[in-house]
Length: 206
Image (cartoon, rainbow, N blue to C red; front, side, top):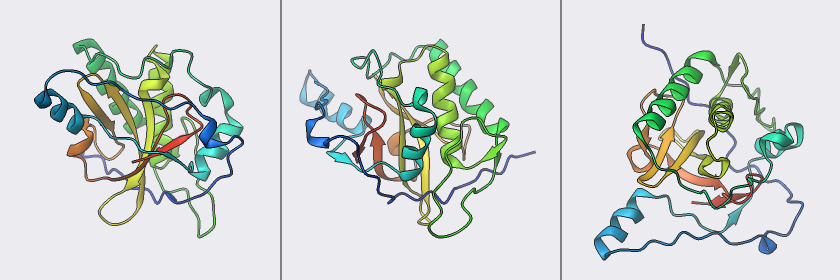
């Protein structure tokens, strides 16, 4: 029987007050070498990050309640991973397993209610799937700086959250709406922001 995947009503524009001055945080850049053709291919394969942006309020609250999930990575230089056949199999397994373990339901009950970001709940919406997948992969030894939560909007205008896995061959999206893992440009998401590699408490515009 085909599983019915859920698009969640994530509040993308929620504003949180940062505890530090964003301009004081270290900038993060990726150096791309090679020919113009290689650069063009890489530019389209990788999400281009902008300046610091406000974090979704639900994520701010999640970090306050679960600080171990939001601590600064010890290996912040490992921002992209080589995607071997074994690692791809792990990605596919985690994506498929979490998509089936969590019953998809919207957890917002009305205007002004902050999204509840919950790790490994029995039921939840898109952000719960995304943070659970990130947690599972970190437990399996994947670098946190290459596993980035991202938010955007889907064609019907609703907010949506996914996990973006940064690989050397391009950025891949793990989405609760599908068991297929797709390159970021092959999704229907209009991107808004993504976690910063150097500190997952902070986000960057897309």
